[in-house]
Length: 149
Image (cartoon, rainbow, N blue to C red; front, top):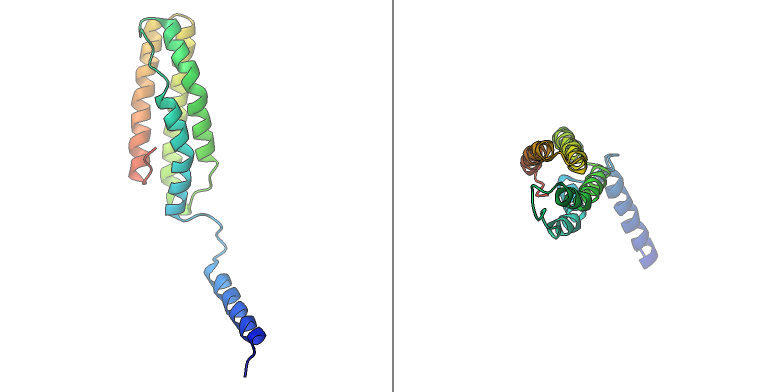
């Protein structure tokens, strides 16, 4: 008859075998775990971005620049932190597209900031329009794979 120590040894051995068999060598998170991690990263940034008021006067390049200067570091950091999370292989292609669009949107936001700093209101407005369009495309692509941020 097995004593308590023998029983625990068998339970431990069975648990080890189950873990080894369940571990397919892929240390990547599951789809749901990945999406939850990215959402957890995005949420505080989105909350902070929502508190940044839009420019008081869109025709005032200094106001536009000030608003972008406050938002841009948050947008960049949010993207960098989200991209640093290793995705499951099933989402890689979709995320590559999302992150390419995100990068393009950030480029347009930087262009809008440069134009606003030069007091080039028309070019700043055009760059902001491109930023908003590409951001919308990125958001649509993100939603298609299950992300809401």
